[in-house]
Image (tube, rainbow, N blue to C red):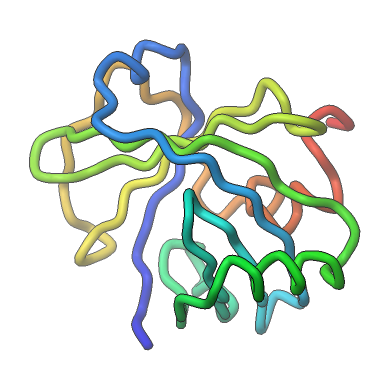
Length: 156
């Protein structure tokens, strides 16, 4: 169990791809999208995971998170009983200063949306902002994966 502190940004262009040191295919669904206890099922590359997240603090920067690795078979079976809508994306990892940004490029009903996150050790920690980083959307619920499933980017 841990407290997750992260900031979320839109991405202006795809120049981050040439700076990326890793790209992983991710498919995920949600058993629960209740904000107080979001339960996510994810297949990331060749691994399965179940993650429970609590509700965010006032700024949306910090929230409880618990994650456990499960088999891909278990994850596939749990995705079958998940709430309607699946998130399909590629996650790119890019180093910037002392931090690693995770950039998600979405497909399907969220095609065209690219969002970057950086995990911090405190809410006011400084970090290097790459040129491709756009407007901050930390705490804007419509950018949460659990909401993109219900109200995809193509409907905005």
